[in-house]
Image (cartoon, rainbow over all chains, first blue to last red; front, side, top):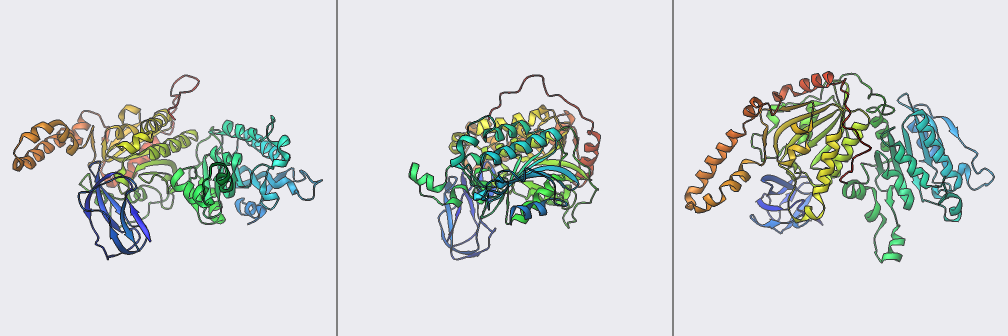
Length: 70
Length: 478
């Protein structure tokens, strides 16, 4: 199991995968909006999205879990 | 690998001269007192080396071990040649402490010498095994620390000691492993997967450096950059807020295979590394929009400060590639002291007296412009690509800041049009040709001409001689 965490504080702008999707290491999971920039947050392992912990518009702080990959 | 195999691999033709091979020879169990010291050549250049022998009491330090290390450092200072530390040691022999710990030529002198040598000759640490307690400071005072994943570690107190003294249960890898130090603490600079890779990295790294601060880095054969289908122009998105991969730009600017990155795994929103343009060595400091939007954080500012000092010490020109929305804001970074870390980067960048070229690739907002060698910091030139945008803040933030009340008063359906209009106005106001007309920037360069342009500038600035200011030394915001 591998957790995808936010690497900086910001708002969830787009969630680009769904629970159950197959993802590759390095593939974008969500795009945050922070400091007026688009911040892609990528998977750090390949696998299936077991759980998405955020919705579009949510605030996340650095270190918050965004998704769980199995 | 055994210590002598490591040295054989490191040097062009093995160790040329070795000192004190007979140290402690009256004791059968301590050949050479656990350390090999001497001189050899790497890429034809003479260097001094000390290499721990982990087969001799785990590479621990006795009186003669310490004296041997001190002496080879003194040799490096006298000859003004690079010093390499091949570290694999459990630390002090506690049984020998009176002889090797507190006295004038005890272990403390090793660190004192390192501080004295810093910036005078390159100091490189290859960490193959543990570097424990006081010994952990050898890497800390080096210009660069290469760590072998899974084997190298640095810590002041071992996990066993941590459990006894503070009650923490932790593994060695978590507390002081190579991966942790190269990606989290920033004490390590380069993570490699085996010893051979560590040695090859050191050999490559040294090709960018002169033997000491008095000379210039060697000029190598000019090589064309790697070929790509997409040109620089096609690579950089029009939308200032959209990410792109800065490595793609760097590869198109420098000679093929010439990139030697430092701290690749640490604070990835800023890229620092050595490279060559037409054979001339440069140090690159580039924001990485693909990572955290290229925003500067406390760690990335810290990373930049050390890299700038490294290049400046050894006469390596600096090229800044700016695409930065500014310094990060919020509670987390304020508590981490982002202001003093940012100040540290700006100090190092200001003081650098080597040729200093600032390229504004896309945005350079707020203190981000300052940190990336903006016009006030006396770069030799500020170049902008046509995509550049220089301002206190971006259009979105500026319109919000200036017209917040006005926007709130407007009926909701009128707001987007008003905001858009004001943003367009703002963009016109900070238009890059306007800034060129005001001579804020010195030149606008077409993206596909950037490499040639940099090459000419670097050539032209070679004879730069500058004393930053007169004083003993600054009071650094560390």
